[in-house]
Amino acid sequence: MANPFAYDPGRRVVRIATVFGVPLGVQGFNWLPANEVIAWGIFTWLSMRKRPAWAAWRHGLLGGLKMAVVLGSEWCHNLAHAVAARCVGRPVDAMRILFGMPVLLYNEPEHPSITPHQHILRSAAGPACNALLLAVSLLLKRFTHADSPAREVADAAAVMNTFLTTGSLLPVPVFDGGPILKWSLVLGGVVPGRTQAITERVNLGVGGALAAASAVTAARRHWLAAGILAALGLLAVAAGLGKLRDL
Ligand SMILES: [Zn+2]
Image 1: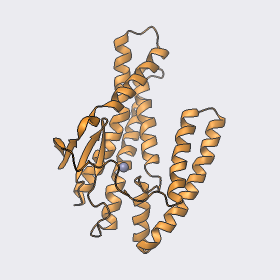
Image 2: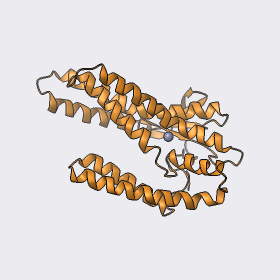
Image 3: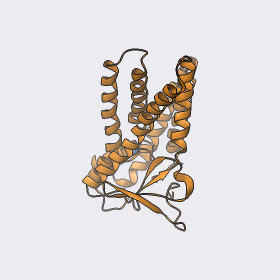
Image 4: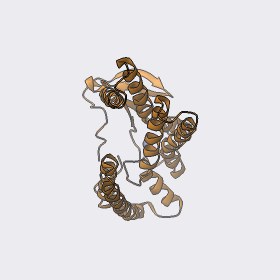
């Protein structure tokens, strides 16, 4: 499957920086930070609902801080992949900004010369970074007062990093857990041709578990969490049915 986020080869790429040896670029107008604007707007609106007596600038500041820790966690996740890929000698070929968020591009992600250890280390770096940020967020929660704006920022960071740590480890091929499982199987002696069948069975099991978790969460009326669990479950089932392959 071709990477749907890859640059259009027929259009000019504008290189804006080099980050950990990786060219950071944009193409066309889709670099516009739509994710940042939307997240800032939502968090500011939530703040206005919760503290109507506040001045507008305080809502904007709190909304901006929550947006920064939430989307910054995803940026850190991708930068950690880039650092690990460089450290193991199989660097990322490019990093693209799409609607304000980073996308890592590998020309040949499955090149036969890449060892299982290299695959696993560069995939595991993203979730490991978020686990570290989660620990920092939980520490910050301890040093902030309940119901304070600082606690809200720490809570937002904790929720996002919990989501990124666990969600990215799902064994879906397009997530980090997919390659980690596949190359761990190869390291364990499974011949590469057999890994697909095993990961598909694992994904069907994970998809079923996520569907059940979604149903339980919906019964408790946590609609956002139920929707996210259902979407992840659908992805896992699609992977289990062989509909998703490595990007
Ligand atoms: Zn990742």
